[in-house]
Length: 337
Image 1 (cartoon, rainbow, N blue to C red):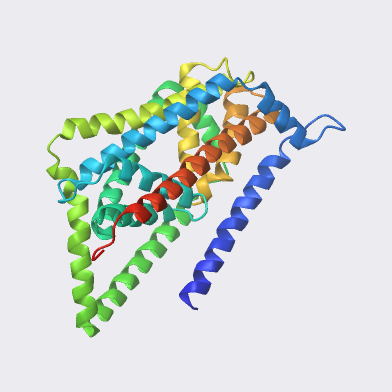
Image 2 (image 1 turned 180 degrees about the vertical axis):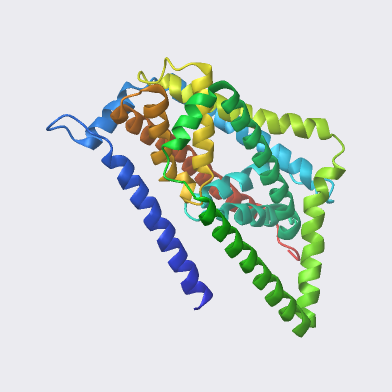
């Protein structure tokens, strides 16, 4: 199968899963007889406190600036100095691409930074991998804190999810993964033995990629990097808190409830779907309904508005970043001119 056709089929499958999950979530929105579901969503939006939504937007922008500065810090040990404005523009372009191509934003933001500051994509992508590893650790810590506050409720909620494996199933999955890994290693070894040039390219790419990954160990101010990482997730939590306060049905939820729902939402957003669409619309309403007895129609409507507002911010910031990047590139003199 041609790579292009394979990619198209992959995106079709992802889009299909996204539409299915979104449909299943919207189907759970029960309204009064004669009332339209979209009118119900519109009413939910109108009832929201716009001041809290504006606060969420400001916190979102600040979190992006901090993340862009943290990324810029990782590039310094590799030998490159990116402008904060350029790393921020590239980051927002990446978020925009992620809405269309799951995880495609990681490469696109590196390419955008290459166009602006001529930083090689391979090295910058290595630093992005480090970012993702650090974010994963922060997410694990957050989930651990959530379970410390709401363990009984969260374990009960997990028991309602259809993700249960028997011991035999777990063993079969493990054996399949191990077999696939061994086959991939063997095929890779045979290909490299047959192609010296390909081997040299891969080794050169790996050296550059490894430089990016190891940049975190050569940071001059590691404590500042840790502070930025913690601040990013604190701001994310603040965004969730602000949105919950914006809606009458969720405004009375306490701190531990916000923490639990933030953890559920973060896990849903990590799914390989465009912007978490679908997975977010399934897990978060169920969490609100099961854990905190928010009426399911209100929970579904809240989730659609929350995710829609967040997506709208990504589209706005991303589109502005694409425009500004194009403007900068047009104004930058080309070599030889």
